[in-house]
Image (cartoon, rainbow, N blue to C red; front, side, top):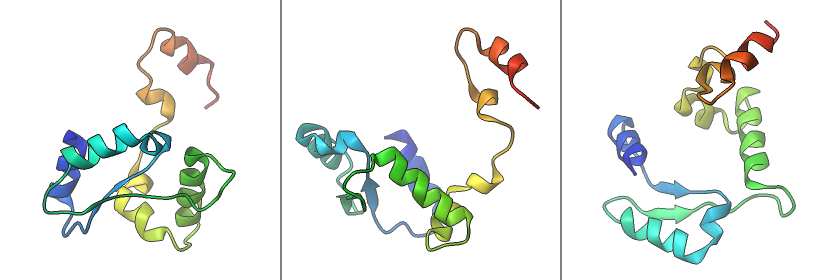
Length: 106
């Protein structure tokens, strides 16, 4: 909830709040989020574009499309993903992370 509030304060003119992911298919989870987020912006659940692909795979496809300059370019630009630095291992905070970092190529 804090992340959504923070995003709404930095975006110039947010139009809506979008819920996505497999947990939004559970009625009580989705309705609880919709109730908690009720306010000036409409809240809606995003439906996938493929019947057989998982939500994470669909998200990865949207990012890949945007990174390639496709129709999702604005989504990628708004997310700031192209400004990211380092590797996923830089943000790994679990036991054994140092061992993984040392073993990683590069």
